[in-house]
Structure formats: structure tokens, C-alpha cells
Image 1 (cartoon, rainbow, N blue to C red):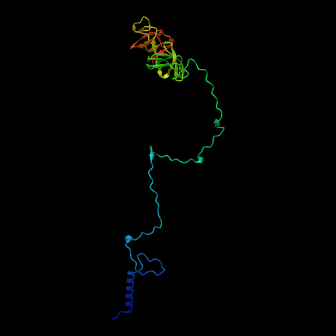
Image 2: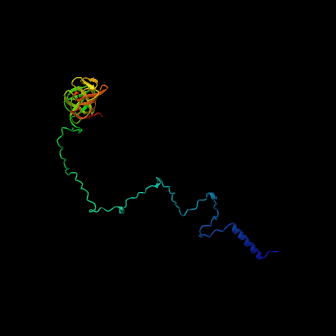
Image 3: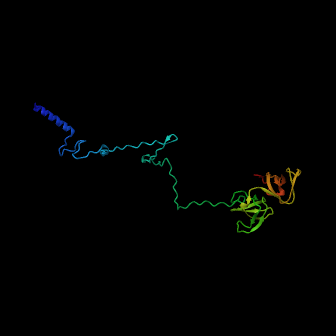
Length: 267
């Protein structure tokens, strides 16, 4: 029995639908690109791993993470700002603040200080110490020169360390001194020190254990013996001295190394 025309039409429609699902028809010319997955006839389909990435329409820029703030002694770092013109203080009012003294012109004449007065004969012009005063020879070989300078000839050479000398004048680094025998000349300040020593003069004298002629004798001192002065009271006739490991009292008139009535204390 032959199928009817209606059945044939239904079978044809079903076959056409199956064919369209298997191979989608391409768009007409000029209709734009084919849908995703549809390629023109004769085109090779690339594997998914080799497909080029789709073009990006925009780029998103993200801020870098903020670094943690460093702190000094538990406080954040100070922030420095440039000076702002509006924060500057206005100029002071002339009535509230007096005007500063004008700066003198560099070429203007400067005021001349008054000349110093005449040098005092009782004060050294270099050290300001009183004159005359006693000092001691520092070394065992000291030159006494005829003038205040190395160009002046040597008058005497002294080989007695600790020998007292009397300073009479000062000139730069030179001192005019008087020695125990009365000779005057110039010695360099580096050859002297401020120690108070004595030298026995006028022969042999007795060192006693007290400041009196009736006190027990301690030692006999020959002329030229040198030693330190330990104590001399102002106006006293006896002084406590040391010589050769012995200590005692000696009349001020028996040695040379102190001014009349001068008070001396060992440093």
C-alpha cells in the first residue's frame, strides 16, 4: 500500500530538521560573521589550547598595597610640609619692637680703642703675675743670656736644678732674673718653674726642730744647699724647710729664696 502524500511530507520535514541540526546553514553574503563554532567550508578547526585569547576591551590598574608606617618611639614619622605664604607672620609693628641697630658699612672707620696705660712695674706684662717674684731652675743645665733671645750670647751656665732665681721683668717668653750671687740675665721661661725653693747662703747654718734658737738641732746645712720651702708665715723670722731628707726650721736670714716678710705655702 502506498503511503499518503501527507505522510511523505511529514517524513521529509523530519529529515530536513535533522539535517539542519547536523550542519547549520551559513549566513548569506554580507550578513556578518558566522556564529561561534560555525566555520566556512574548507576551514580547519584549531584545538581549544591553540586558540588566541580574545581581545581585552579595557585594562584595570590596581593600586599597590600600602606599606606599613614606620614609627619612632611609638609615634608616626613627622610629615614635613613646604612653607605656605599664608602662614608667615606679619612684620612686627615699629612701635611694638624697636628697630635693630644698623649694620656698619665695611669701609666705615672703626672706633679706635684707647691706648693702654703705662706698664705697671709690679705686674708682669706677659703673665700678669706680681713682680718681683721667685721661681726655681727646672733642669741641671740652664743658660743665662745677655739678652731676651737666642741670638744673645750665653753669659753663664748653671748646673743646680732647684736653685731659686728672682724674676724682675718679662718679655715674650724670656724672663730677666737675678741669681743668688747677684748676677742678672735672661732665661727662657721653659727652663723655670713656679716651685718655691731656697739656697743656703753665708756659710754653715743649723736646721732645728722648732722656730727658735733654743730648739733641738736637726742638721747642719752648708752654703749652697738647695731644698723646698714648706712654710713661711707672713712677717715670720723662721721658715720650715726640707733638705737632704731632713725637715726643720731655718731663719729666713740664713737662706735666699723669699721676699722679706713674704708668706709662702708649699703647693
